[in-house]
Structure formats: C-alpha cells, structure tokens
Image (cartoon, rainbow, N blue to C red; front, side, top):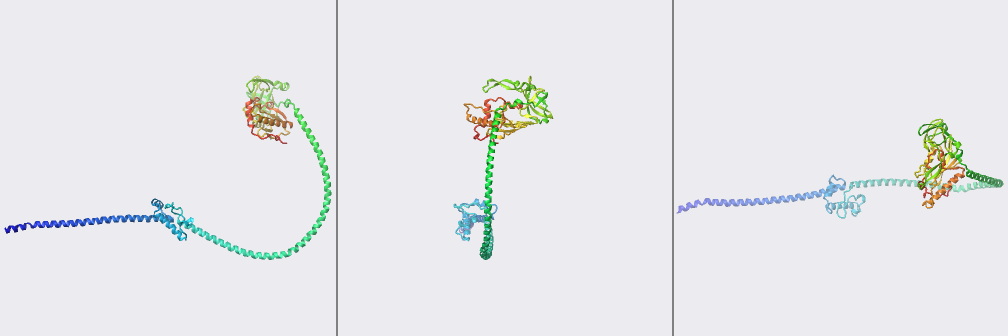
Length: 525
C-alpha cells in the first residue's frame, strides 16, 4: 500500500510544475502587457503635446511674421507679398492694429506730443480708423516722410542762413546810410545858410528883368491892339463879301437844281436816237452768226446785242411792235403791245480786229423773220470802245423763279463791260455805290404788288415809298429813268418780261419786316 502511495506522489509533480509555470508565465505576460500599454499611452500624450506646441509655435511665428510685414511696410522696405498678405490676415481690433497704434503713439511721445493724433500731417502716413481697422497701406513710407522732413529742415536752415546774411548786410547798409545821412545833414545846413543869400540876389535880377519886359509888353500891346482893330474891320468886310458871294452861289445852285428837274421832266425817249453798232456778216451754221465787230472795237465774250432788220432806221420803232396774247395772273389771255426784235445774240469768240462769232440766244420767228446777213446790231448802253454807266432800282427776277436776281444782273453787266455805278439795296434801303455825272441810265425793275387785302400791305407800302424816293433821287441827279422791259431787250440781254403776281410776291418776301426806318436820305453827295 505504501509503495503505491509513493509511486502516486511521484506522478503528480510534473503537473504541479506545469501549473506553476503556467501561473508564472501568465503573471509575466500580464505584467509585460500592462507595461507595454502604459508606455504607448505616454508616447501618444507626448505626440499630442508636441503637436500643440508646434501649432502654438506656428501661430506665434505667423504673428511675428505679420508684425514684421507691418514694420517693413511702415518703413517702406516691404517685399512683394507683404501688403497682400497683411490685408488678407488682418481683422479689426487684432494685434496688428494694436501694434500700429502703439508705433504711432510711441513716435508722438518721442516728439514730445500727447498722442498720435497730434503728429504733423507729413508723419501721419498710416493709421487705424475708429472701428479698429488698419487703413490702406501708405504710398509714402516713414523713411521717405522722414527724408522729406530732413530736406525741408535743411532747406529751412539754408533759408535761415541766407536771411541772417541779408539781415547782417542790411544792418551794415543802414550803418553806412547813417553816415551818409550825417554828411547830407551837414551839407544841407550849409546850403540852407547860403541859399537865401543867393536867392535874393537872383530874385532882384529877375524883378529888374520883369519890369523891363513889362514896359516893353505894354508898348507892344498898344501897337497890337491897333493892328487887331484894323484886322477885325478887314475881316468884317471880307465876311460881308463872302456872304454876298455865298448868296449868289446858292442862287445859282437853286437855278441849276430847277434846270435839272425841268430837264428830267422834259426827258425824251433816250432810245429814239440809237444808232446801230454793227451788223451781221454771215450765218455759217444754225444758231451762230458772225458780226463786223472785234478786238479793235473792244468787244469781249458775253457782250449781247439786239438784232433788227436793216430798214429799221427808216421804218422806225412802230414797225417792230406786235400785238401778243399773254396770260394774266388769273390765267386769262389778254392783248398786249410789245416791241419784238428779230433776235438776240451773245458774243462767244472774238476772232479778229473786226470779226466775232456769236450764238443766237433767242429768235422771235426763226423761220420767217430770223437773224440774217445785213441785219443791224443794237445795244442801248454799249458803243464801240466804251459803254454807258447805269444804276439799278427795284426787283430784277430775270428768269421768273421768284428770286431777286439783282446780283446776277450786276455780274452780267460787268462781264459785258457795262459799269454799274450804284444799286439800291432793298434790305438796308440805301444806295450801295454812288450815282455820279457818268451815270446815264437808272434802270427800274419790278415794284412789289400791293393790294387792299394783302397781309403785308403796310410793309410793301413802305418798301414802294423807299424805291420811289430812290428813283426820284436819281431823276433829280439828271439821270434818265427807263423801265427794264425797254432797256434790257434793246441791249440783247434776255429777261422775263411777264412775271406772275405770286412769283413777284415771292421775290419781295425777303425785303419785308427785316429793315429799320427808311427816313434817312438814300445817298450822299
């Protein structure tokens, strides 16, 4: 029984050893696991602390970097991104605005001022507004402002030195002037003492000279008075003679005026004594004739002639009077007696001394009574080598378009060599130019058509009165007054002889309600 027990004890030992090993191993692994977990937590905490420290360091570095950017911008040493970075990271009331306020306040204290608001304007380069927001970055840096202030200070010192020099020079000048003044006072005292004596001597000499001249003047005055009385008597005699002669002159002038008026009243038809100026030589082609006038007769292109038959001088004016049917302003036809020429021609080319080519501008009856060789040429104002002077009064609508063509008439007359001495301006209602002793004809144009129910009756009445006065003035000057219907056709100048009332009113319209008084005399000698 004992052996069995011993044998059984030996067999349980390995189990116990294994159990002990297992327990010890479990305890060991538990302790190791606990120690490993505690060490891991410590490392994690260390990493978190390091991250916080790094974030705080970066935030601090960013703040310092922004402050550095603030300083660089303030001093004018900023780099490319300083202004943009500062504007993006700045907020109202942050450390940047506090730092900028501190810089300005410290600058004011260094200058002995209360605060930044007392700084000079040139040093208020960058500030913070009431909301704590930094303003726009300065365009002029602190260094530049200080540099400008230094320049101003140096300029002020230079100006002060210049002023000081001027003051010293002025003081020296005043001192020199004082010496000159003392010398002048001494000289003045001497002159003041000597002058009265010299003045009295000279005054006595002048008084003696005056008395001598006075006596001479009294004698000369008496002589002159006698001569003046004699001259006044002679003057009176001459004035009386002059008055008598003037009365004689006035009497003669009155007689001349009466004779001129009588001559104007008794004027006969100026055209009754016209003589032909030339004749037609050939008609080489239709519409063209050749005449016996040329360069030796002072013919020029543009000169016009009236063509009449070669027996016109024997038969007279009545032989060319025709009865024509013409419409009136109402469109009804009436019989009118008209002087009808054979044709009118215009010089187009001067070929030789006594030869010129002309174009036919108008023919009354080209088939039965056209211009032919041997026909005579007439012009009421032109004669070989010369031309009569004329004046114009009235409305000259030569083509019937309702427009006054007086300027064109003057231009055409001058082109023909017919001088226009004067014309009556209906706008200004005064003579332009002057009627003189060479003026032979005063050509009358159209007068305004006036009627009882015309809305412009008063204005037209005044215009007609002004034109009538101008014609009377020319007649008193001894100038022959002729109607344009008689004058222009006789010189071959084409004009429209019939003008409807509406066209005449249209041509008159520009001269109504546009002028001042017409009481002034139309023309001066």
